[in-house]
Image (cartoon, rainbow, N blue to C red; front, side, top):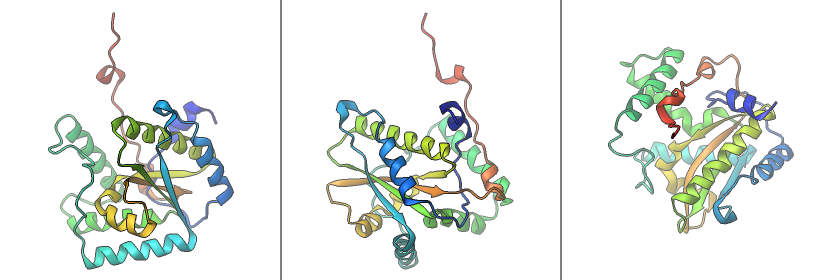
Length: 222
């Protein structure tokens, strides 16, 4: 597989098989992704990996948190600008409607939509979860560096037959995550990435989100 194919075939996978990810393979890809560029070679990314028994303990931990108090933690950062303006609002709305259409969940079925969203907090049953954080002293440039690491990693995962789903939803419960993982107070949780082998029979995994035409976001200056 070349880079073009990995980029074309990568999806946000939301249903995983009960098949473990080999730790040595994962370690190698995490290390290889660190060739991603970062300004001044700061390499600001910090990662916590959960698999096996540790992952199950975390799932129980967050389930109790949601059961006792479903209200989100005070936000460390906004996942989306508020209010989300056009054309970005429409893009977000449309991809959500495409996903729920594949699942057969109508707009009026609020309970089913909430139940589906709750699957985020089990990583869609993925056998591996990666949490990403950065030092709070870092700025927008280093957050961009973190994104380049994450994209590099997801392309490497695709190359090796693994699927993934980046999840910003964990920012809603960052205190619970940080407490469980013992992330230092000077670090800020960014997101998680679920990793595993996608279920080829799951309808939701047929979702291919649309992309804007080049002319919508690129200007060739003459």
